[in-house]
Length: 328
Image (cartoon, rainbow, N blue to C red; front, side, top):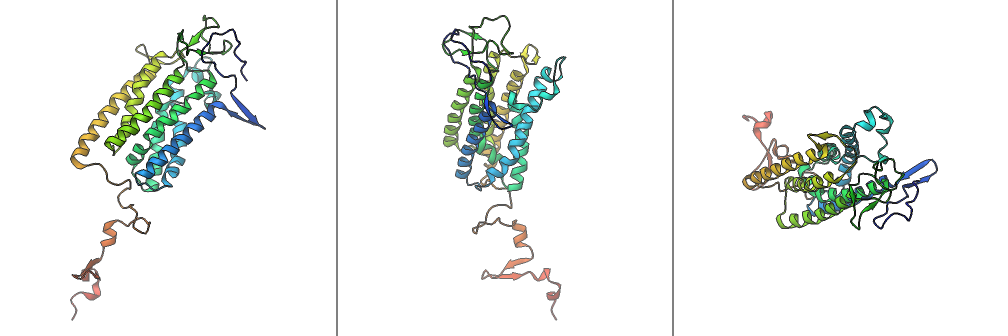
């Protein structure tokens, strides 16, 4: 447990000296609790929205079984690639790679591999990935808003020095404490900025979706554009070590590129849907539920080898029955 910050520090947001608890040989880290709480809240909101859109109620959990592990792995891989010095540098330690409770989950790796896992789950459940993406978009922001508080418990990923009354207190004994700064220095709480930005985004997405009823993946790409818009200015405030490209942090470039791509896809999908219309069903073709609750067979299978007579009675097509051809 980290030592408590002494009373000599100025007023501001104190960083907690509690980082988790132990149950026998098991250590439960506060960072992990924040991530899990965020996932639970995001699933709750996604499940409610999925039900409103007519999706099968159990599909969210079936998809989550694939999307969440893929997302965690992808997030960790992105972090390791974008901040390699701690793992592959001169003093790097490869054993730190699986220790995600220390912090370090890159959102775009999580989204990329999480979408792959969601695609697998959607195919197995017979529903459209784009329909699930739209239902899950506000839940993703909610999960991120809660998960960001894990950085507060770990005293990491804060911004530069500030004299604002909501400045963040950091333990001077923290190994990541910036060298050369006095112990009374306050820092921008970038975890709080991002959490509030994301919570605002949840409300905006819900309002826009209620007003315009986005379908076909458009709400998801609106989420991506909104998040990256905030991530650019929040990332620019951070002072932790990061890979630089042309003088800017790698995550800033990633956010800029994802923002441009998201806006382009959002516009392209809008034009396409104005011509063809958005998908009317959350189900993949051939998986729509029948009135009895069972999935309907594809139309070609239902009609194969059969027709109806003028009275609507079912009869077999003679052309498909060799014994009834050219009766003598």
